[in-house]
Amino acid sequence: MSKSALPLLFSALSVVLILSGCSKSPGTTVQEPATGEPAKPAIQTEPVTVTIGANPFFLTDEELKKYVADPVKKKYPHITVVRSNDMPKGTQTVEEMVVNKNIPDILVDAPYALMKIIGLGVTQNMDDLIRKHQFDKNRLLPELIDSLKTATGLDYMVSLPFYNNAFGLFYNADLFDKFAVSYPTDKMTWEEIQKKAVQLTREEGDKKYIGLWAGDAMWGGYQLGLPYLDKEKKKAMLDTEDWRSVLALWKSLYDTQGALMPPAGTNYEQLFFDGQVAIAFGHMGTLQKLRETNPFNWNVFTYPSNNKAPGFGQRADTYNMLITQQSKNKDASFQVISVVLSDEVQLEWSRNGKMSVLKDTSIHNEFGKAITAFQNKNVAALTKAKLQVIQPFVYDYPTLPVIRINTAFNEVLHQGKDINTALREANELMEQDTKAFLK
Image (cartoon, rainbow, N blue to C red; front, side, top):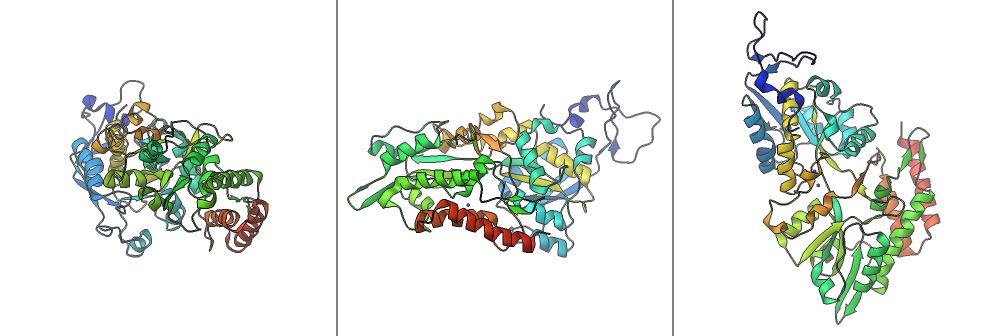
């Protein structure tokens, strides 16, 4: 173009006993189970270094230290976490690491890259480690877990999410004041936003003001959880009534711009930061940019609801940690992930403007509260809408399905093509790709 403190394995450290008469390897403590409880795994205490391969776009050096390395060292003094030497600046791809045979213990990536990573043979079934360490997945938002399984097509976990990119609509309060329009609020519908957009779109002197930028049409599909492909039948699914309704809605939103509509390819985000767009689609990156630049009096509200999916905002968009099958420190690596997913660390993520992946609403309510620039801002709205389970959207095609949809919409909006024709043609092109490239 973004949400019981620790796993049960570690919650009873106070009752750890060294079993008399039992042999154990050096550097290992064994936990004696209480009557009727399953035995807990041995905990290695020998010094170990866990390497993380993470592009700084997903995990900066500051974040790695604050939310990973330092809390892990506090909980497990024998574990040291470092960024992989092959990814100090985010220039080394996963493919290059595999070729160089220097694969880290933990990889950080987004759902769209999981299929490629799986194809490189570096992932593993993490369910075994989840069970071994008695990690409670039920603490996590279920749609995030479901999204990772859907994205991979697997019935087991190859990674765990550690924060989620959140979405909402941002607005320029100065323009609302200038034109005497009431501010938008949480839980509004697209139709309600559309009415405000009409009130805000106008021309004054040599200045043009656009009421609303809703983002690309693909976001309308994500909100409804629409698939691009029936993989079992190997059939494209762009020419459907649901997609027609999305393009019709999106056209109505852009039609509010009337004669002031900029040409195709316009950078609406820049227009928003330049003070020419009143309401703009945005996400965590938008929030960070507003924090850094503070170009005007701004605020944010929940992603508007589509009547076909009441209460839903955008799709899940997680950043995830996976333990590589080549790792020689799998248990220590899982302990690292378990600390990152603890209530304490997730609360710190939330307070500093990253959406927690946990269910706990008290953590989400703290979103952004540690950041001075977010005081008196409705930033917690980014965490309030329900998340759609992600549908697979990356295929080894020369043209991605999202590009097909966005192109079809642009043809409707800027070339006057009717929606039925645009979707039919997009579907036919995707069918050709499916037959040629889908194995």
